Image (tube, rainbow, N blue to C red; front, side, top):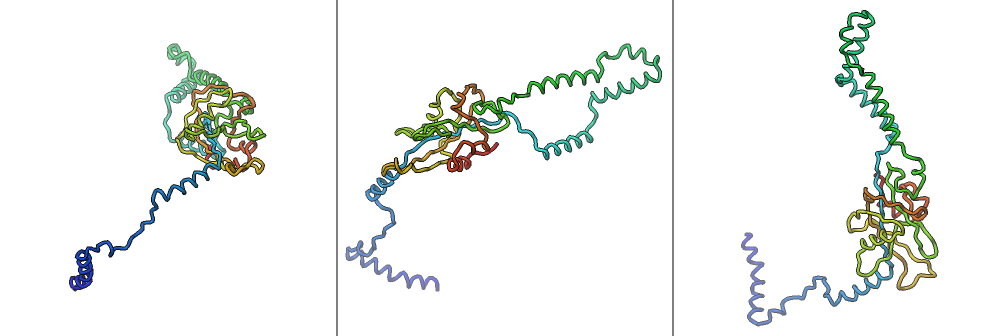
Amino acid sequence: MAAASSTIFLRPLRRLFERALDSGTYACYYRSVSLGVPSWTALLPAAAAAGSAASRWKLFGAVCLQRLPVLSQKPTPLEERFGELVHQLDLENSLYSDHELRLQEEAERMSRKKDDYDSDEEDSAHQDIITAEDLEDSWEQRLKKVRTSLVFQEMDEKNLSCVDRCLSDNLMLLAKQRVGEEDLWLLPQQPWEAGETLRQTAERALASLPGADFKATFLGNVPCGVYKYKFPKDIRTESCVGAKVFFFKALLSKDHHSKTQEGAFMWLRKEELSDYLRPAYLKQVNRFVFDI
């Protein structure tokens, strides 16, 4: 039945094609179908309109230079309690070390000396001069010296232009830059120039900072964020209504030893940015800046 029904439906179509081929009017039986893809000539006005719209915004490339933490952060009270608990469990389940066994032997030897002063004279003549307690005292003195060398000056924490402040936190570089008639604290930025990529613009912004030779590694060619704003009405024109700032992340090299000028740069933690950046600008920066 299926074969018979298919033959019934296909028979009229076959006759239609045979007539079209015999009459030589093959093309007239086909409807022109449009796939919805315009020709390249139709795309030219749209491309020109898009180009004119893009030119209405002035492009900037900015760099988000970060100095990663050098030291581990101080543990929280909960972490301290958990560490003490784990240490206590390890201590209870562990075996005695050689030093602890030596302390027990010396304690037993001292107790025998108290009972009989003459019984261990031969052994005491051959025993080591340095006891385990003497070793512990020497270790304590060495530990105090190490702790003293790890104490950092408090002035480095308060000096915002010092890159060595807050060694346990992630810091970000801000530079004072001229925008219109104002001096603002911003991420280092430069206007885009024809013939260069936005990453090259961000690299140029970092290299153009006065008095600083930063060695940094850029993380990719794609911007991590963008900030768009319109110019004031008195300076806004039809050809340029505002600016778009594209941010690129970069990490400060570990072997960097350049000293920044005091008052021209600041190294800030994330929670300190709100004191220097404007709210709209800070909102965009917080989207790609994370505490590590």
